[in-house]
Amino acid sequence: MGHDISPIGNHQLKTTSVKELAENMVSRIDINIEYGYWGQKEYFHLLGQNKEDDLFILDTLIKHKDFKTYRLIDESYQLKELYDKFGNELFYMPEYWYYERYVWD
Image (cartoon, rainbow, N blue to C red):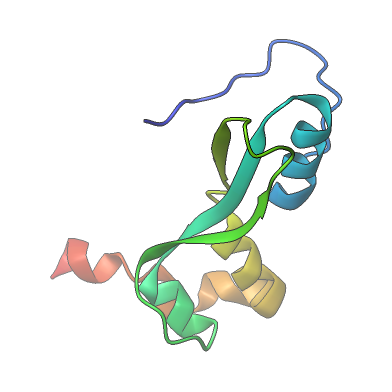
């Protein structure tokens, strides 16, 4: 079951990457965290990778084996990878806008 998180105060968490956020949370709370992203086949193709749609766990941070494990998902991870590879040109690539094939066909 997913939960949306809304900040209600100055949390001072490091949020520059999903890895830093996970490490920062584990250092503050007695929990374990696995973190990753949902990858899309079409974006993998642009990145030169032959993978299917799937959940990819990048790492698991175990503070203690008895602590509950939570999953942290970066919904923009693959988009950041694409932008790092192509820059602004990404948005001019027809392959990036793959969903249009389903809308207009």
